[in-house]
Image 1 (cartoon, one colour):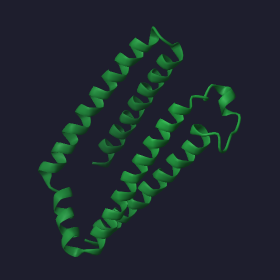
Image 2 (image 1 turned 90 degrees about the vertical axis):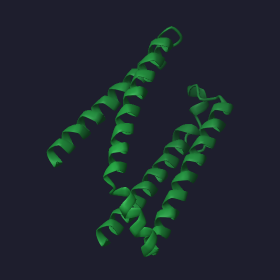
Image 3 (image 1 turned 60 degrees about the vertical axis):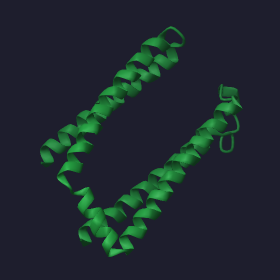
Length: 151
């Protein structure tokens, strides 16, 4: 159980680092706090910045809730045992694998459709969506290779 406890602590640390990174990226690129010249670069839409800020705050709030929840679980042996059983249940793992892959495929197709539609509107958006699709495919391929060698 100690090994599982350490994996939860490691997950909390990873989530906290990713949350901090998200906040830093938003402060640098989503606001004019760090780089005052951003409005001259085409980022003058205050509604969009407010919407992104709300999204970032909401996302980070959910991550903080998860971290606090996991830390409370670590302190309670009964909750920790129940969480361990649930996360290592073969049925749960199979469901996660199936939903993860099907979600990935659906998102790729939706992004491809959005890229095709956006090609009629703005080539920059189309190009950006294709770069995102390529990045997703590369990350998927690298993860696939890693886990094939690991297991």
